Image 1 (cartoon, rainbow, N blue to C red):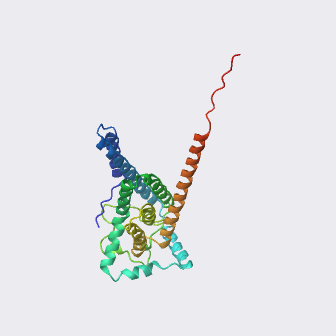
Image 2: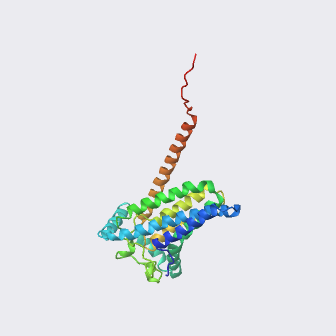
Image 3: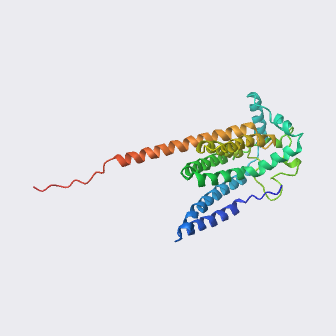
Length: 276
């Protein structure tokens, strides 16, 4: 499968152009152009986050020793916890070529596609909720990247599992796209999809919010049945998301408390001596 993902260098270039365009639009004398500026500036921020993600993935390939051993350890932990086997998830789809190919395509495209659509929707429809969600997204991605510096192999690299993407010539690791194949733990795919599902459900009352929840559930199943992630990868990814959301909430509450106290505190005027 030909993947059109940008390299981290290209992402920086795109982000720089978007930032320049955003600043120019913001300084424009036309009101319509100034209203477009926030879109360009936010796109520049997302491009920067993406560049960091790509670069960190490349750097994590510098130490690959123990990746297979850690993957086997995860497999043993899952069995001790009586989690369903990744093989059983694969067996549900392997007999249905169209389903497998659809799962491969979903894995390759919806990771960024779903998140991008959600961020655009949130920015346009619920601008006041965008900033905290974007902060949680950035924190979650950063923490996941730090954890991924310890390489862990995905199931598809172990005997007994089927690399469904290679089976049908749909692998994102073929062609010009070379992300780190040993960054299975935690799953950024699942963390991002869970963020999309949860916040779409929280901020909107529309019946269409079920699509975001379905996206989260479908992403979890797809990353497992294609043998790109362990169940535990997704569990840790969601745990990281929850921790970052609580951290952002606590920091925001603390900041608001400090601001309220500063506003209430009387301004002490300098004492002026009274002449009698």
